[in-house]
Length: 236
Image (cartoon, rainbow, N blue to C red; front, top):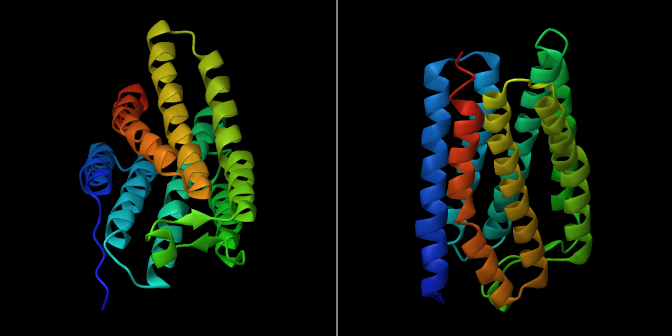
């Protein structure tokens, strides 16, 4: 049996930065639900809980050196990080159109279509390589990267950004506008890390991976900005 060691930089990234982030996202998600279980709270907390789950899965597979287990777990990690965004989009749509207009059926339809499009990623031949040859780090093919970015951008990132700006324009109260601006800034931070991580997995460059890991620290800020901007208000 061959044993592999995780270098110090990767150990810090996975077991301190990412695990810590996952714990914080999980705590905030539960905190939002404890305040109220109405639909808006459920949607917003689901974003946090899915992101936290993605981090936990990532921590688990980083300690494994067995295929196809690690490849599947890596895909699940990315899927969860991407899928979490759809709940911010649905959250925005309800704020704009009301729960009566944007029904649970529409909510489930959008989430289901998006999940199906994301799932196609796992079917791309040689889309993910992660084994001894890559030092057990995920390496993506160009078709995998392009398809992933197209789906995430067109179905989640761009619509979420658009509707966030539309909501901002509707606010007349300066305090609410300021809080919503924090929300928009936080979503941009989340999207930026998602894009950086995707490109990093394609380039497979040690320096770019290091930059991405350092940038990942901003997700701590993102978690609190989202909560400060919106999470504390939707209980009302």
